[in-house]
Length: 188
Ligand code: SF4
Image 1 (spheres, rainbow, N blue to C red):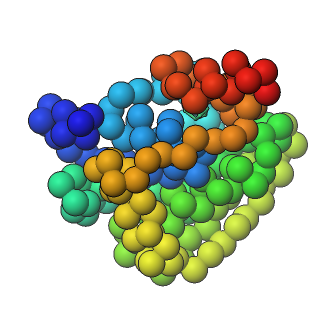
Image 2: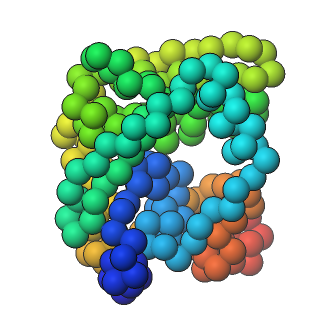
């Protein structure tokens, strides 16, 4: 099993951002979690990091906790006395609800790791300069549920559900995914 191989290779750290990608597509997230696929670095990602730096969302302190046979690790963008903050940079063309679905899972897990009662997702639109704030009370049960889903997928107890969104598959870099082929062959 890929998860066993990853452990055997000494890569026992699981990143919060990888678990959060379950909100995008379980098949892709599982490939990343198992070490079968590593998303390439893009120019957009490099620009996004610059903006994080400029806006002060540049915390470097990582938080860790045991996660089954692994270590869960996450580095929130900003850490305050009672909250963590997660910045998402957008050009406004990506649907906000998809961006938020991912961001809330991620920020809630960071809040649990950093033991903070609140989190806020900040969405910054580089085209308009607009900033939107989405504060939430941290929910440890939701975090545990998300972790349990990731663990069940990684251990093979559950099968991953592929996204049914062809536009996601078109932009997906996980070229070995059999579900993407099915989508295209069906002409959807
Ligand atoms: S090709 Fe589609 S179904 Fe497959 S991992 Fe990518 S987004 Fe998911």
